[in-house]
Image (cartoon, rainbow, N blue to C red):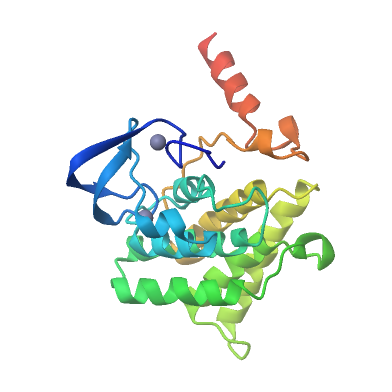
Length: 245
Ligand SMILES: [Zn+2]
Ligand SMILES: [Zn+2]
């Protein structure tokens, strides 16, 4: 998704101002003073411009006030530091869930930040390729990390350990149903949707997840399942057309 010139996000021309103005960063939501944005209004702060995918996910999820984990994940997936596939998705999944959960529960900012930093640490143990090599997709494990953190589970816990493992198991079942090849975008979205359902069923917390999703990445994915993927664009277009008739 990297644009060689112009806006990092959309490639549009940049517009410079003689005086500094106050902007809100498209990725992390931080308000910063700057003198450039693109003609479509995108401003990207310095740390989101320079940071690694993990840095951008961490700061965006700590600062975001969004309550929809799917839209937050989609925005971050478009950051140029995020690869089409890669283990950064193993952090993305618990980070967007923790961020939106913390907003719904009105947790203090420091507590929210602490949870997201722990998720980053834990996700570093979940390497790329786990899906095929260990039989456990890292995006699915990411939902287990999420439930473990919100329940303070440890290996000695009783119901908390049970819930965390069941969370991972349910995500992995949904991921397994699509077979493969792997797609870190599809599997992350499947994991997030599974966690949204789980959170409602087990904790009574409803996150307003966007279900009108239409994948913007299939042209970058050589192994895209296309019409067999639940998020493929053609499906959304077809649905639209038949709806108009
Ligand atoms: Zn732009
Ligand atoms: Zn930023």
